[in-house]
Length: 174
Image (cartoon, rainbow, N blue to C red; front, side, top):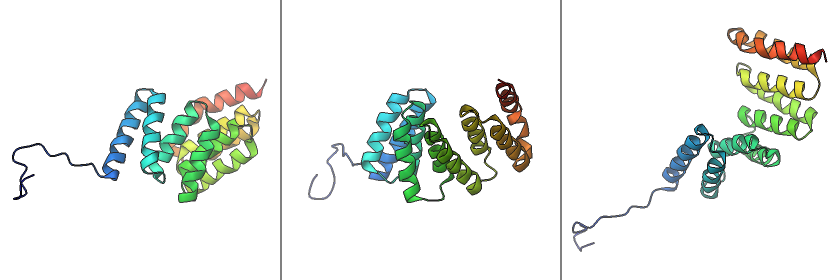
């Protein structure tokens, strides 16, 4: 750079701000998830968490990716970190509930899923996941009750639950 502040035509490299870098990493991680490249997504998320360990979006993505990689212990860790930052974060409660259920801690998982429902009663994903967790735990009657609650709470989404209700009824007869 010259004394007048110009670069004399030389390219200037400006370091990206940490938040801009994190935003880029989040976009890259989401793109990897969309392409079902979960290992790549996990690497990007870990890069982002190294820069911004308290970023809720990254923690949500981390929990999601780890869950679908079958790493339920790490999913639990990410969800609990998110909840330490925002105790009313319904998505983290839902993720925690699913992870706990898959870890065999079904009753704890149910409580977490119920908390997600309490925080966001119009968000049908939590009801769905509650029903699936209960069905997987061999509790079809309770799973069907979760479906019925969802249909009652969000009648416009009732059609989404028809197939799940049918599956629960079939599996419950075994």
